[in-house]
Every structure is written in C-alpha cells, then in structure tokens.
Image (cartoon, rainbow, N blue to C red; front, side):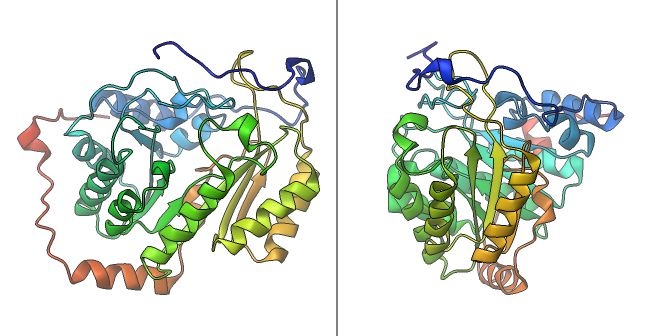
Length: 330
C-alpha cells in the first residue's frame, strides 16, 4: 500500500488551472506562528493543518491554534481530494494522547479540534485512541471546548460509542460532497453511511452534542444537489455546516471543475441558515476547522455534558513529567 495515492476518477481535462483572484493564501507574518510550529515539532505531533495543506494554516497558527491529527500520518484510504499520505499505518503511539493534552496546555487553548486519519487496519478504526485523547485533554482543562473530526469507523456502533462516551462537545464528520459525486470523490466512504454516523452520534448522548459537517464545492455538483445535501444533514440532526472551495493538492488528485465566487458562497450561507442550520461558515478558503472557536455549543449541551462528567470518577491525571516530555521555551 505504501506510496499509493488517489486514483483519477474524473476527466482531468475538466481541471481549471488558473485560480481566480479571490483565492489568496496569507503567508506567515506573526511570530506566534513560529512559536506554535516549534511547540508541535517539540512534542512530535502531527497537525492536519500541514498534512492536508490547509490554506489557512498561516492564519490559524498565527493565532496560536491548531487542529491535531492523531493516529499517525498515513491514511488507509485514498480519497481523490485529500493530500494526506496513503500508506501502511504504523502502530499507535500510546503516549500521543498525553502529548496532545500537553500541547493544548502550553498553547492555553479554549477550543481544540482533534482529528485523525482513517485507520481501517484497526478493529475499532482508532476510536479508543480518540477516547483517550479527549479524556487526557479534558484532564488538562475541564472547561476546554473539545471538538472531534472523525472518520466513519466503518459504521461500527460500538466503536462510535467509545468516542461519544468521552463526551466531546462538538462531533464533526464531513459529508465532503453531494450524493451523486460521493463514489468518485471518497474512498470506501458512503453518503448515507456518513449521514447515519452523524445521526447515531447524536442519539447516543440523547442529543447533548453539537453535530457538524462540511461540504467541498467546485467538484461538479449542482446547486440543487448541494441544497438536497443540506436537507439530508438537517434530517440527520446536524446544526453546524462548513462550505469551502475544493483546491487540487496535486495533478494526481481530482480536478477543480469550478471556482465558486465569494458572492455565491454568501448566498449558500443565507440559504443554509434559512433552512435551519444554527451556524454556517461559508467561503472559498473555509475548511472544517476554520475559526472553529467562533461556534460555541448551546448552554444546555455544555451543562448536560458537565453533569454527566461530574457523576463519573475517571481517575485520570496529567503527568507529562513522568513521560519526560521536553520543556518548551518561547
């Protein structure tokens, strides 16, 4: 599997090579960006910001925030849009949850996003690793908003329950594209499976979680198909939506069929809000974790999670010194 990449499933001649003027990536000019990069390197952590070539990593890192990608750098799937490497994964690192927690502590975060590659080689798809990371992060700061962006765990309910048992505040699983394009865009993932995962995650905690999903535009979808996908997400109980422009990572990836204008992104946002989404981030450079802290779950969700956690006795203690984690100096 090593070295394999996405298979071209759409006519590459559809690709629009010239980027329009509104696709502008900000370069780092904030010293906090370099401090954050040094911290992440220091703790030997991986961020999806770099692995997925996120166009906003300069902006987010300049603000001292990042989305941590656990369970390794190699994904077991080869989706046609994704820049993350597809290769045989290595064994999980037992101390990674603690290292992520230590990073959130040093960065003094109020909101953290935890994501992962797909680990179809593991029976639980990496669900227990998510659970441990959530619990370790919460041990550092019980008041921190914890958001997870997860794969579908092959729709295994018992695996999904591991993640939900850790009680994240925001559960994010991306639909990625419209139903018609799903077989072309996503490897192994299925449109209705993703909807089922989002719905079941909310049901597992009696609705006491904010559910979130994202869709890429510019892959050849129609407006009618996009709005139908919005309706399907609402039916699954999703309240937070991100819409962004698909950007081709390499010539081996799917073509960009269309560059959506900022004005049309704004129109899509208005439609989504009118349909019933509580929060919508929509724009050419918007990604799943873009300005994630701009959204805060409802108070009843926060209170319910806190009450549930207060009734437990996890016994978790954050002890980075015991693992010999290096000191980080700005």
